[in-house]
Length: 246
Image (cartoon, rainbow, N blue to C red; front, side):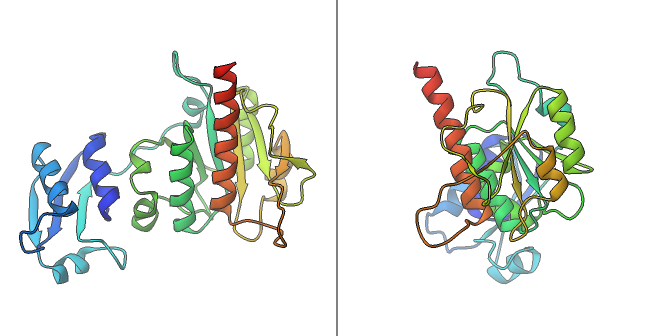
């Protein structure tokens, strides 16, 4: 993996084994790369300083930001586990991506989800973006904290969630119901977001318990999936916070 924030959070979280950190030689001046090297040393992770050309050759993205780490892959969670509330923890709050293929959008959605207190992410095994180096970099450390379940199919996963008592809420620009004031936000809930351009799959939409839209006031009729995800995630977070204050 690569990217300063992603590698920094990998080392801070200490949830998976890191085998090696490669840091670009910046001539000894202190910066965030120095902090990353110090975090690696504190965790007993070998650090190797290389020149920028060497680093760029081993990187999987166009801009590794001066650091590459070799680590164990992110562990996958079972859907059943994500659908259950942990002892004393919040009700499940999941984000389900129905055919989102852009790794930048996947990473951005993960950042919003973890920031809003989501407890898990569900993605399809096929025709979906996965945790590639680009997605992990875009997530800027969220992958170290947000459990991810990779499922064979999203419609089948929504059925599993329904049986587990989790409400599935689809986001669709054409829905008449509004996201604001979502009535089941305090319950176990899964926000379902569709692919860029195409939106929710027809079967995925049918399997949702409720389909809502983000009310838009300007001339545009839709939002990027990562922007819609951010609004939806924080609407759930707001409703849950209001419930705790009541």
